[in-house]
Length: 508
Image (tube, rainbow, N blue to C red; front, side):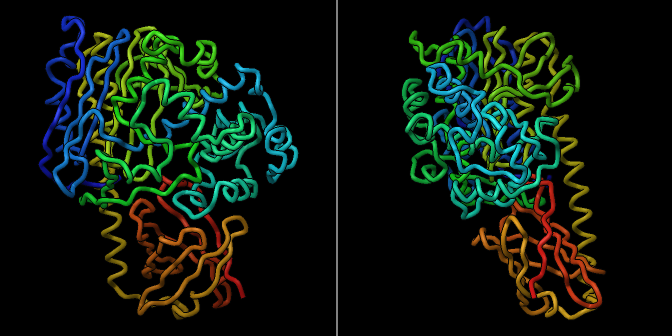
């Protein structure tokens, strides 16, 4: 993570409904505005929106701060944010609904609906089913393959082809590994099963009946709307405005754009057995199906209170907390991090949307509200999380300064820079090219036409790579050299995109 530029952000709040003031915890009723406005400054977040649903009523729907660091447009309850992986629960719900209508089974093999589907292991390709792809039990490492797809020029069909070329890190169904491309597979199956595109059916079966009138299924639609939050990131201590991410090639995994007002309708439906405004929108058996555990993520912990296990359903994280069931998910795409949480036994739902991808406040605020409704002590999660966030940022800044000091020594590699230039191949990704620009190298990518890596020599066989898109980060790349000849380069990007490295081999 990174550090902060302190900016003054103005609050604008709209309280849509307040039922029985005495039933609203003091934190929500009296302290919420102060808590969030302070966090805007402390975390360097341009804008935040929050909604709370309790007992079928919308308690709070408010916006704080600005839509963008450019201009003074305020965030309100109708401001659109990209919600990232909170899209996944919509995708899981559609497939559970299609099963309810006897159009498919969640145990259906993928090849039943996508006969041309392939994987590195033909047996896995034959056995993989809808439950597997919706619950991240394919055998992939978390985020494996995402560098290839993320904001790339690949089509959905090409993403599936690239996915099929990956070698899973784990055995099939042996370990949970968060796999965005799995939800693209699910989305393509939805089209074959229903005869409608994923984006069409999600609008007609969920958004329209829930009166989520401003919600959009595709990221490409976001810049065309009014009242929209802009994406931001932190580059060390400077807040940067980002372009809206191009990611509709992974749409069923994370492309939905919504507001806290619209998302509150989704929460009300979830908490009222699939009903909205007295009408059944989603059968309760479908709701229950999405919350059935399929995968074990691991044990769960809370800094203060009791929590034991972490499981995964169909686009939902499932855990316990102080003896209550929690159904939730988080979402992150370039410039946004968000959370959706509900406690069925308490009839309580919370959604938090933020327009920077460098904060943990979206989770801290959720826990603060949740604890207040459970009559637990005030913990100031924001302060606690921010302490560790800043320590991490300071460490990264220290490492970067040391790296730049090495660059400033103007050391010479053992071979000339010209020898590093050329055409490099990764067997699944494809090509990258390295060219020389004065005393630096420049790296460009076959499937990421807008991404450039600027390479500065450090020492040995290492270069410091600063990506033109700050979301990809600043990474040390290592070349393999044998007898004075460059053999390959190990490429890494920010963990936010993918943990695993890619080795590109230099072509003759």
